[in-house]
Length: 353
Image 1 (cartoon, helix red, strand yellow):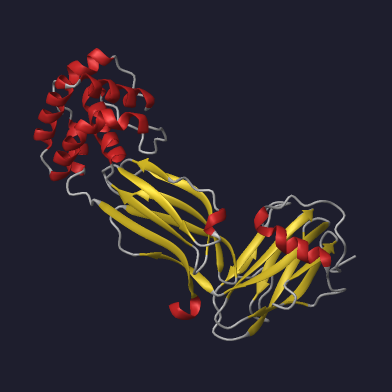
Image 2 (image 1 turned 90 degrees about the vertical axis):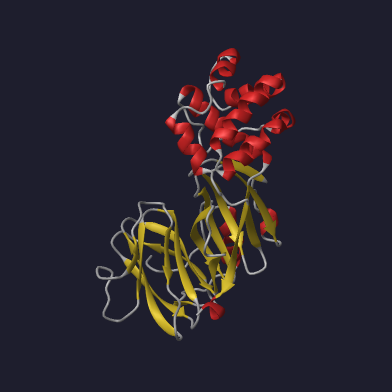
């Protein structure tokens, strides 16, 4: 049976992002669909080894188009031909993943309505779901010029004015920052994100998949908070004492230590102002006068994987910021911005072009 729609005979291990689409597809299907269009965006198909199926794809003015093929069994490759002269061998848009992997293509925004041809080519006997989505927006991150927050965002799939995006947040500075995440809108209410985390110099955190739209946004705020300042000081102390830096991607909790580390906050401010010598002097004085500070600092280092006896830590802190690594780190924090913010959302294509 080549190129015919048919009922599915086995369950499909698909994620939540596609569950609604598949449910609608299974309820009602045309007998022999000839095209993918907004009126008929999905179909089921079966092909024998070596055979292929061609379906007309409607491309819409001002829209990007996703074409997705999800195999139920077997191996099929996906091609989109934009002109009659193209063949699967010469196609610019092709996806040839291994068996049972999803094939997906994204076609750029069109200036006018036109037709393309979707080709499904069976490497083995295969059954599959083929569908298209038309996208009227694109990902925007504002402001575009940022000092602290670097964001890598990869669009996974999209439909209408909704984008599913894989997001990684990076600290682009040599200082330490606490990153806070705030979701706005109904779609963001279902996204499981950490409230905050701390990143050191060039550290990064993968946030996973985030769903955004014009009304559902993700706001990322980087700030020099008490937690960030505590890690900055601990990092410099660790470099000075044993020559080892804290991991910039560290994921530990220090909320219970912040009260005892509070006296060290002026040390961080001295570092940010560029006076690392005064910061070293202040650190020595504060640790000597307040044993709780030393205990809290030692606990922070221990949780961070830095093992050093507390008495030895106290002795070596008395030597100041002597190591080159510690001085470089201290200098790197000079004039780091107090706070920075970035917003991710989906912006209408018609307003972008």
